[in-house]
Amino acid sequence: MTTLSQALHALDNARAAEADASLARLQAEQALLDLVGELPTEGTTRRGDGELVAVIQTGVRRKVDADVLARIAPSIPEAIGKRLLRWKPDLVTSELRYVQNNEPEIYAVLSEAITVTPAKPSIRIETVKQEEAA
Image 1: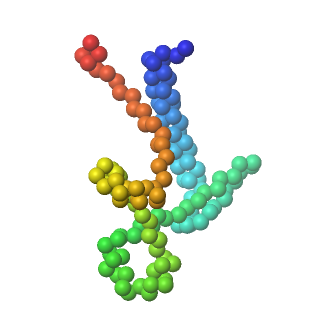
Image 2: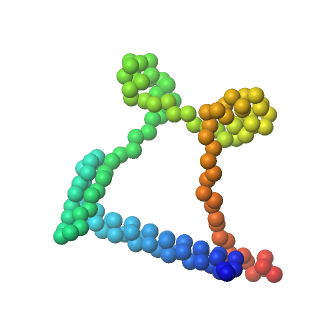
Image 3: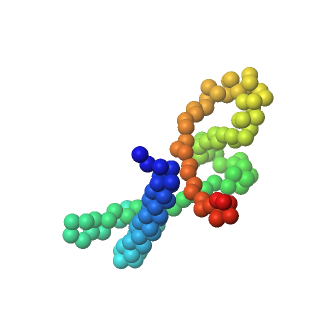
C-alpha cells in the first residue's frame, strides 16, 4: 500500500522527469529544424535519413479582430462573409452560474444547449516551509 507521502513524491518526481524529457524533445526538434533549413510558411515537408523520416508541418495562426471586422463587415458581401467566418458561441461561465442560481426558468431552457463533462483534476504540489510544517 502506498502512503500519501510516497504518492506525492512519486508524482513530483514524475513531473520533474516529464519536464526534463519535454526540454530534451524541444532541443532535439530545434536541432532537426536547424539541419533541415528553410521551410515553407505553410505546408508539409519530408526529410529522411535511412529508415527514419521527419514529416514537418508548418503553418500560421490566423485571428480575427472582432472590432475591426464589425467596422468592415458592410464592405464584405454577405454570401462571402458566411463562407469566410463562423459564429462560435462561447459560454461565459460566471454569467451561466448567475443564471443557474437566479433565473432557473432561463437556465432550464439554456441547459438544453449545454453539455457538461467533468474536467481532469488538476494537482499542484507545493513545498511546505519548515515553520508551516511545525
